[in-house]
Image 1 (cartoon, rainbow, N blue to C red):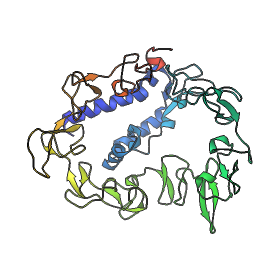
Image 2 (image 1 turned 120 degrees about the vertical axis):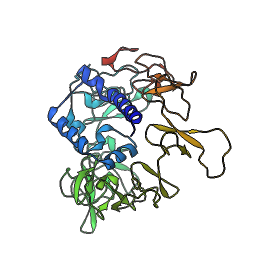
Image 3 (image 1 turned 135 degrees about the vertical axis):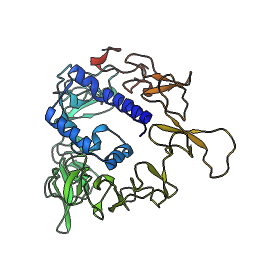
Image 4 (image 1 turned 60 degrees about the vertical axis):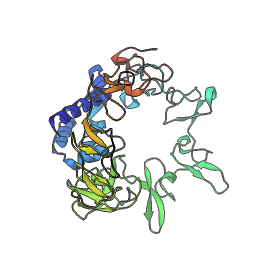
Length: 402
């Protein structure tokens, strides 16, 4: 990155980090454990371009996904008790966080069996009950034992709702040794394993332990079975090793032949500019290139021509140019993303700010209780429906109902 791009990246990532964690740390909603923090920082320092490419290409990009040495559950410890501010249930030492409540969120007690419930506002204790019914008639009902009728897995203690031969559905244990067709036939914490010509439920495998490549075999959500062991984005497999995605391979390699993750591939060197590539093989091109029309093309820098979105380098937008152009000719110019006070438009993005449609200039993100129309206008990235004001955590400023 050039200096301006680097500054834009720091501003954007800093704003995202502050929205997600900054206020929690300041308000004491969570605390940081220093030992895993040091390990995480060391891991980020050692992470290479494959790790960065994987994070930027993920559907839900996040700073901590750069390395397998950063575990949020180990880094942050919840401190909010009942009535304390929260953004998600993991912030609460007990109870849950009402994520769909119209007011700023505070940890609440779970509703008891038989009490009224509303998903996202008044939750049932997931270890004891489920929310049943519709509208004002919704109440917490006890989880079904084995053999109880059910509509879905959330209604059963085992986490398994089996279809019966007579067309009914009932809760089933789905524990070790039970017959299964896929993981949905197994209880929570189990997967469906091939064994001696049949398929049976087996306990999911802990990270680091030996595994066979089966769907949902690994206990940790981010882990996958690579090299016969459950690993979290190891970036460790060598050339020609079996893989499922870019994150399995060492820096400078990618997973070829996965058809978008639907089958196994092999770790091979990333393709040089001009070389042939498959669009569904994420990471086939190097970090400063993109697979366009079957070939790796270098991303354009500021001032260079471009043919559409995502053809310029980081924090640079492809802005259409006015004038005649022939078939196949580049139709835009790469322009550095705008900052607060600068001109913007639907093609030119703002950095850590938003584009005001009335003035066509980048405007600072709005604090809690400010009027809004879109969530992208708010620091919290949430414009409360109906109220049309920016949400603010209880610890960061009052809004309606706090």
